[in-house]
Picture (tube, rainbow, N blue to C red):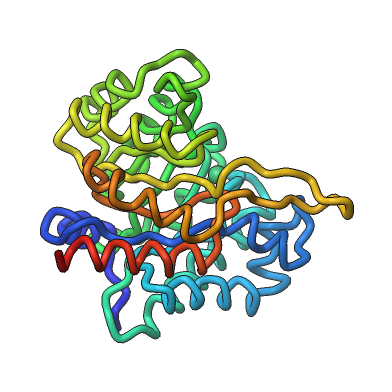
Amino acid sequence: MTLIGGWQVLQWMGEAGPLLADGAVGTNLMSAGVDACDVIAANLKNPILVRALHDAYISSGAQLITTNTFGLRSAGKWGDAAERGLALAEASANLTSRNVGVLFSIMASHVQPEQGNIERILAAREDDAPLILLETCTDLRVVMAAVSTLKRVLPHAPLAITCHFKDDCTMLDGTHAAEAATELAQLGVQAVGVNCCDSLLAVINAVDRMHNATNLPVFAQPNAGLPTSASNGSLQWTLDPEGFAAAVAPLWRSGATVIGGCCGTRSEHISAAARSLQSLITH
Ligand SMILES: [Zn+2]
């Protein structure tokens, strides 16, 4: 049994150098033929595909993998797919010979636990609750409302918040990265960070601002550049694995505690990042 809970993951972050997280989940499932509207439902309809993605990331060196639950809504049919999504990621983590943590991904704007699903899935978990990852946050007020709700209904669950920043280090609502880190730390979250963004430089700069504003662990999960549409309508991502891996050293110097990928990144990106990280740690 090598799956470790969210609190252990946080302790691990404090003891080890930057941890390597996985890359994108949704864009890879879509590349494999899953309809954009059906990504979370793939946990029920095509669990083998979801497991294969988790397994590929673990084989690439990822120490943290993310559930296929981004976009989860609290109501109705979404609950079963989300519960299965957590089980699939935990099953992959459990089959490894090394420690792997699971991040339970949700959108801040979809946190409505009074409707039951998130609360139902996680309420029974106390010390072994996964780290809840509110990602791609664009509006600090929405995040703060979500955090306060989650802390009320799931007081034992550790929370990590990653935000999308523009090139000037502000969120879409105008909040600066340093201010976001300070406000979130005051709310009592366990980690902050940056994901997606329009450029690697935006991620590196925002990580630096957050790291300087707080003592919390800082996630850095850039995307693989901006997508272009191919003639068949599929999205093509511009940043190749080596280009992605070149960001590992500056992210580390900026204070990133967790380094992984967002939209468009594949297991090849995480393999390349693992090599960069290894070379930094050993030199
Ligand atoms: Zn993204």
